[in-house]
Image (cartoon, rainbow, N blue to C red; front, top):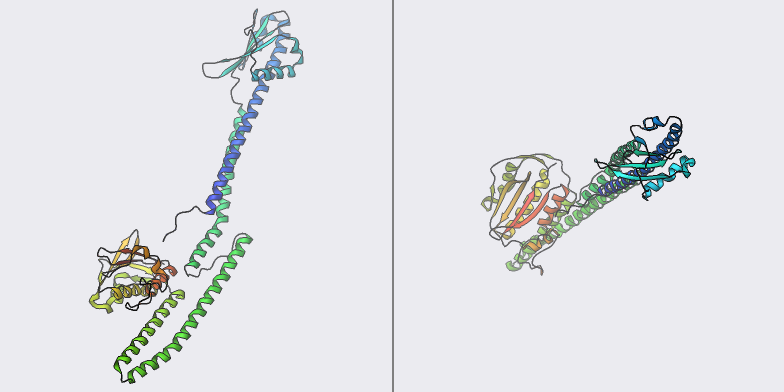
Length: 430
């Protein structure tokens, strides 16, 4: 009878939030890494352009100081008679750096300049190059780790990561606050479907407030309809019992005892039907307040009238805060159903998965498992021709089922070891 698990609406929206946040983060990281590569290339081109112009001037004035003056932690320079790079590599990155160098210093356009990349033991790559000086010698230089990440880009990446996480946290919190009224509405709708009346708090956005207001109005109309239905049936039942009472008197005065017996039986059957209908209708709108109930003593009290036909098995007497009257009516309806088709029944008090259950097992013919759902419908009988050779009107089990729905209990069935019906009633907890 339980519903299969299905993610809530808020879960789907949260997944969308996470996907959007992930896409935004990945896109931002790619964007900053692209900026990082461009910035890195521009920086190397600027440093080399400045060095080449300055070194050319220094070499013209103090030739012996050129290498020492131009070298730094990021750039190493050396003057030699031959170039360290024979031909330029046509790598797109090197072509871009060469273009940027000439953009920074157009005066270098007429110089012979060669660029290349070489690997380092640490897995990085250095930019090496050679350019002819004015006296015909060559200035060989090395710009270290051309593939290293730019510090400002890493700071931007970290900032993006933090802001994305903050955005997701704030978004999920807001989503949770927005979904709370939806969850309450869903719970209220399920409770209304089970016959309970739940006041829905009219809060949240206007659309949700309007929906909650409409649901409260719907519940009020359903409750009024059920009360009118119950009052109508009570009136009909009262009016029908008067002619039934007259028929009993007539049967008592009849001389033909066989005919009188048939009339008494028909009147008794009609009276039983009215009583069953009255109990079933009452289960639709019964109200009860929770109270502490000692289950073992409670069962002994309500089962005492059956004598030895119904035995109670329990080793404990737990006290549960539950609804006494609905529980009484549900247990009696199931026991009456067992007694209608069996000679004996056993009632057991047991605890399963943290819940107390009342199990009624009889030694009757039982119910085939394929009919476990169908017997919850009013007036359902296994004898489809509705033969009158068996008592009952198909209202006992539906009455217990309606009571459990209204008060958040459960009713389930199984087949006993001897083929009889096992009905397990989970005690509703307030």
